[in-house]
Image 1 (cartoon, rainbow, N blue to C red):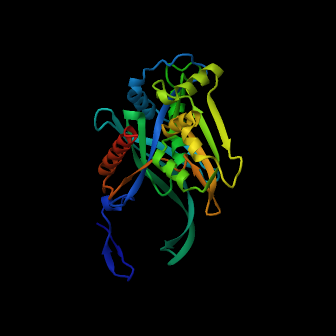
Image 2 (cartoon, one colour; image 1 turned 120 degrees about the horizontal axis):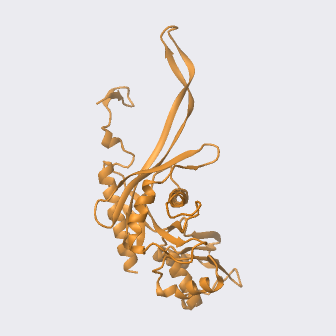
Image 3 (cartoon, one colour; image 1 turned 90 degrees about the vertical axis):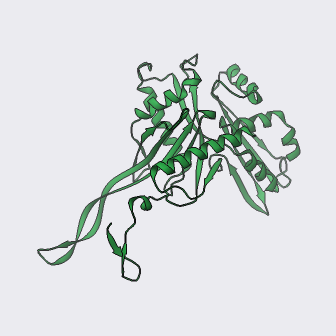
Length: 322
């Protein structure tokens, strides 16, 4: 165990490796996304049975290349440590790293002086995730440097690039398109509607679901097929911004209900705007997604990963309860 100095300049023991993990002992949320597989535009049939999604996902994650994010300071994202702790469950670690140089004061023993010198530095950030076949939810422990839609987009790109390299892809054109989409929290969306004095607009986006789409929005799926489209967007704007959209009418409108159900099931998303106490407020499912809290995250990677797995399974239970 190495030693250091405390704030008063006295010696103290350093943290053990387990205690030093960024998540150890903290209360943290798990972002809940849904892993969607959709037929590519070139495909007319969905070839891979949905029941094999775990095998399919496992193969693509094992073959996933690194993905870059950021503009000025590029981050190299990778996924690894893939395991199957129990049937129907896959876990792993996703993270980014960045190499560069920094100016540091380095001791020069020859001149007996501190001198400025450019030194190599490596920074990284990693977080555990877990996937459950039940509802195909994937949960990612919130890291301070992660943004939800960035990490979801990175993971989605990894899966699609791996898909394009599969043996059944012709000339690099995949048969399946992967999506990592935010799961909505119906109770939170309803609470936002109730708290908002005037809902001035609602925007719904519906994208092609997996083959086991719910009956509640089957007519939206049929409409996609009839129009040969990949997604449907609908925007509702209040006639009077001061009074907003009729909330009771919104509850009774079957089409709006179908869009909301589809969005909460991560087959699209919903964005709402309005006013509360004279101030603008916004609900964006891509930011206000379903989360599951973990109290006192375990101190090791193994225990933290199991915490995330349990959180995902709790989230699937919440979804099943409606």
